[in-house]
Image (cartoon, rainbow, N blue to C red; front, top):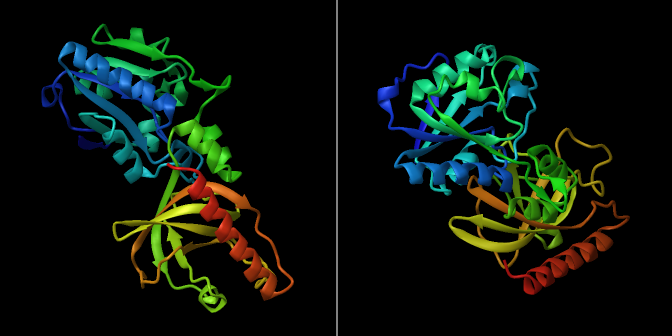
Length: 315
């Protein structure tokens, strides 16, 4: 897959690309609904002898239009690129979302970013909008196309009569329901970060942990104890992860929760290494314990519960 970043204004011409069947959307999470949009664009490309493409945008519009500095993503850009590439797309256009880009009139967006890139067919969800204030819709797109491309509208994607959306999935993650995330997306939630030095209390208690500093773009699941799989240096291990503020040791909460992974049957130094966490199930809420003995007993139980989960469930 060829990845092309588009500034505004861009300098590409029609002749720079073959005829394209393109899927449009922000595609945060690349969930089942997104996959239907992208797969439809790929099928249209194959049926007509064209190339397939996806156009997404970065950063999130809220980061620009509302100046939100703490916008988090289900799939930060690198993960989104990887997931879209795995679907078999030929071209991925990443349009830089700026105030100037957001001010484009619908016709100008179509002229510059669709007709101007040799698009012959557009596929998008029923609620896709484009142009200044989202004035362009899938209903207006045939008019703005100037007869240069056709279109396919993908209807609402639902599971159990509930619309699957990126907003829904963000809410699910923020509630710690990583099992529901798996149902909505067809995969486990995955985050990546760097192993850093922590307070080293876990090792003293007999449960050494990897303290992970996540990429700040990720949505962090709610506090609690989770059964996870950790991948480091190309190897994957079962484990338990604590997201929280360690109330047994700290009276006041910090600004951000710590993320600590106890990796089963593992005893290597991995400081400064990238560690990937695959989230499977939330085992319990974070608790404050009256004694270290009770804390150790609960961690032992958490470890047993996670082992039983992975023995019972094959993924």
